Length: 506
Image (cartoon, rainbow, N blue to C red; front, side, top):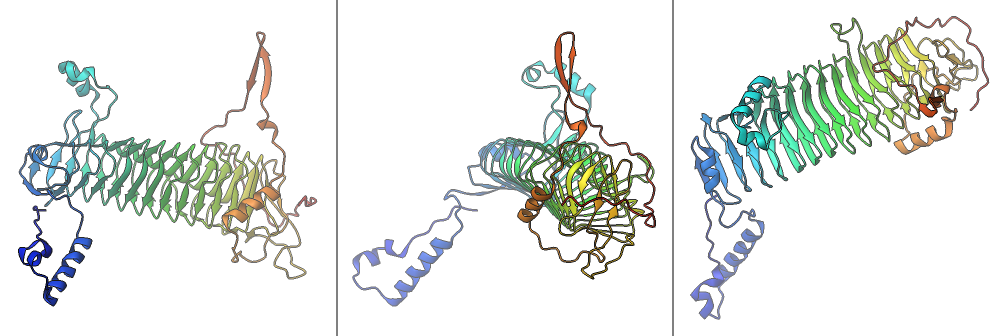
């Protein structure tokens, strides 16, 4: 914006020498005050600079708060070291080079919009040769640094309405606070966005596709919001949350990835209203505890026959993931709709619908998980339990469309228990529902109270450590879970077989 000069009415000589104020002057004065109050707070010296292809020259001559306008065509790489707005018009093209990002941001309070960025892929040989030929740069660099298209090192940064193609790493973020990525298209990169040790990050309305490793890799960060993004056809993980907490992942499309969304050692995250389809795992939670809430997600047709024919998981908790909640999710058309496997405990599964899967829900080697108020119908096997001891009812149980018991007193709860099929399964739903559950009214706090009340089984044998003495040294070891689990064959539940009756311990 050009420099503005405002002369206020009370600074004129007429006002200074006159003791009489006309109505016109008073009105004009009031309008001027209003203009001052509501005027955007640009720096007094802010300017609009029209840049040519050499953007760096324009940046070097700009002052803090200036806006640099860049027209269409190919432009040079640039580095931003002061608070600026850089606006591309007509999608100017900026290209990265080996170990030289197309855009590098070192300053706080920078906004960049409207660029098409061409990255450079991974080339280990070329990188080695580059550093051998440039020993000065090699002295302060690491050989494992990826070829990044955009590097962000400043707080308060916004990148909007840009596209990035073909980079080893499209967007590199580390130790940044207050970041916005909006309406970004990333295609054909090894990794789309890497967000490390950062906070107050918002990624919204972005489209990330055909990446070889990760669509979005978020590690050791907090207060990250991923909202309304499309993460499609990435070879490995669509979104990875590793050692993160208090993030919100909502309203995203996760399609045709190996893992749509993966949480690893993550806590206190809200995963809600996402659609996961045609992945190997739609949503996978591994070694993650402390109230990750998965609510209102749709996991549909997750199957990747090129990996294992017909195998695909809707929503899975694995490897000692505990104290999480699965609420109001829908899983249909998967091999396992819902799954809890390998040492997971004190998880609550409430008010979910699982239909048209090979297994509606499958539990393997777990204990003290609470499953109630769910609907299982039209699955080959509605519910299956292997080497586990979990709780399948509170004051109510679950609805199974293959339940053939009676309801003599018409209270909506079956008179006979529902036996959970599976090798060495000793669990029963003692209060199976006659009709699908439609009266969900428990909130998160109440569900946690239900877990505390009903999940009271002691530890399994495999949870106790093995103590041995080897060469005079005491060795304490635990059974190491496998990942992913290897399933034994399971057959459909024969509803006509009489269930084994057991006293209800609740």
